[in-house]
Image (cartoon, rainbow, N blue to C red; front, side, top):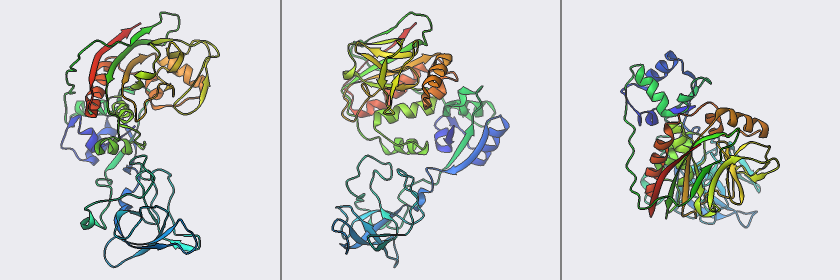
Length: 397
């Protein structure tokens, strides 16, 4: 489990510095495994200006760029981006920097016989978005040439080892609660807004009453008319600090709530659900394509989330591609459920699946966090110009 001081202060009113926090964590039995810079040493990525471009002598689609990060120093960088041009302000990664997306450590290299010292970066390479068609274009930033592109990237990340008997500390709020109890500060109230609803949710949810049912409660909220998009910078920064890649606002919000409250959620594209959600035991031989792009063939009595057409995903373990959200998704059904640890552990072991949600559910999730998780996620999704929010509904086995 990792956390930053700034994220911790979302839940804890404290004047303690990071060293005092680390000492107290150790004293209360939350072992600090290590401290590292956020997302690697991103301070190496500099705002730079292309002074001159010319055609690569040995490649039609490559350019040779004279790049400056300030002062009199100029480096030669080979670049294949169409938008590389004289005067462009962009992001430069020097030799020794590690590219966030590929984890490749740069070194001085000859490209088609010409030495290149580092690279000019696209948003995709820096895990900022999926945009990979060209290098980043920074407008009105000529006065910041030479400064680090990633502001606050030097914030330290605390890596904690959480023992199996402390699943409550697999979320930032749980850690803040422990620190508050130890006298480090005051736990802040969890703020959730009242959801204004126009109508009841029209997607039927049912949990089948059968032996070995792995789901005891299923909370859901239907949100229609959203405008899914890239996440705002504050959310991208949070996701990057976890070592994850931002995907879209909806997915990033569910991941944020999972790490913030220790409350795994799942978002379905409501338009891809065939009539209703049925939480039931699997039949031997059923299969589905999961979000990790693998096809899983199921054994009997695994807890599945299904609709009239078949399996949508494995409850508490992994969702499926058939009902997955995309940037074009307009209507979503948010899931916040309680799955039995024994069911999660058995299913994931049989299929060899490891996910952050599975890791938490198999250790035990607070059932009382179901509604809070839905409300906080819904509050965040309201940023997306939502048309309507329909009843937060809980179905209990």
